[in-house]
Image 1 (cartoon, rainbow, N blue to C red):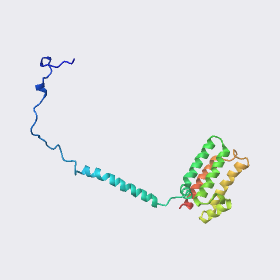
Image 2 (image 1 turned 120 degrees about the horizontal axis):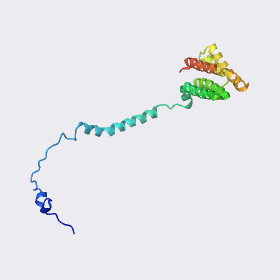
Image 3 (image 1 turned 180 degrees about the horizontal axis):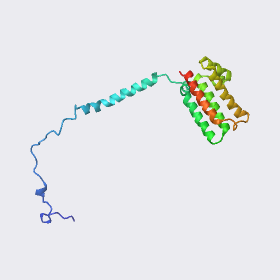
Length: 186
């Protein structure tokens, strides 16, 4: 059975534990009221403001014309050409010369095709040259571009992949793409 604590055990007795009931409450404010304060109005208005901002973003995205694949390629042509050239550089370091020339040729052809919006079916040397001339690209630059493609073709199809100067061709390709960029902007 449970034992009760008695005053002899050192525990407080019932008279010491219970306090007399207060008949009057002495209430006072601890600080300013939250109701109607600036933080209250900010927190109340925040969901509405976020909802309106979300609606504005949705409306903007619906009204903005979506870019098709061709337009995206046109805008990103230089970046994609640099990625191709970086991949070609990796092939060169691994000693895979045929893959290097293939990537170099693809970087050159795709860059011009994407910048000029030439469909793949219409990618002929004469058609590309005609488009470049129409954009005001000088004859010398067009000749350098064609020469690079011819060197890549020689390396790929005439068995000269390991005999041509790789670094010089890479530097020339970067220079040609950079110079073409001035004429093909926009």
